Amino acid sequence: MKSHLRAYVKPVTSLKKKDYLSLIRAAIAEDKTHFDVTTNAIFEKKQIVSARLVTRQPGILCGKEIFTEVFSILDTGVKVEFFFNDGDKIKKGDQVAALQGDVKSMFQGERIALNFISMLSGISTLTKKAVDILKPLNIIPLDTRKTLPGFRMLSKYAVFMGGGSNHRANLQQMGLIKDNHIAAAGSIQKAVALFREKYPLHKCEVEVETATQLSEALKARPEMILLDNMSAPNIKRSVDAIARFNRKNNTAITAEASGGYNLENISTLAGTGVDFVSMGCLTNHITPLDFSLEVNQA
Image (cartoon, rainbow, N blue to C red; front, side, top):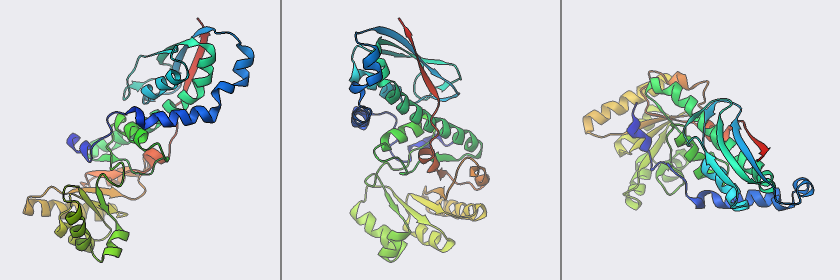
């Protein structure tokens, strides 16, 4: 496995509080937690309870830090202890964490905390399935910028925790010259030349759809070439052409396949030799992992 290629761009290996604090606060405001009529009616006084976070299906855990932060914001007295780390495999029925604190805080934060950890674990779990399919093919799955607005860094972190690789997190991180850029600039070589002049230290990727475009792109020597909506035979021919160019010119241009790939069709890339496959489905076709918070009186 080309593990070093997980550093396609600087990977999101951890999260900073600025990546999720505003999201948690927005979720708390949205849920009107302090006006929980059910909990406020039943529990007038402080009552300490314990709870278990249990998974109802197997998968890859992701989001423990955010789960904990939800309760920390609502009530610093709620204590959360996780028995697994992000990126760990979890089985159906595993007790993932133990909680203790005021029952009102527990109920007020339950759904918000579960929503975050379920969504992120769902992304990590789907990514791991893609990794398992692609590993024997020596291909690495990439995420895309097709993420829920505001959740970009969380989504990319979840992909990395599932074993996938991160493509650019934003438009500043690297250059990706696509068909519209090329059309407006006049040619691939002109677009790359203009990019190199302005941002000489940034990585550059060029999107191509035909052998003619590939030939022009190779002359411009970008770091990566995106093979968009090509058939598997054409991808193989393109990858072979890139390999020949690399050998002749002592370059290390990598190849990425793109075009609606998912768990059902990524195996068609077997034998193409492509380095990466971009998969928007990793972050925009989310099936949350099923967790349950079981509360008991302490």
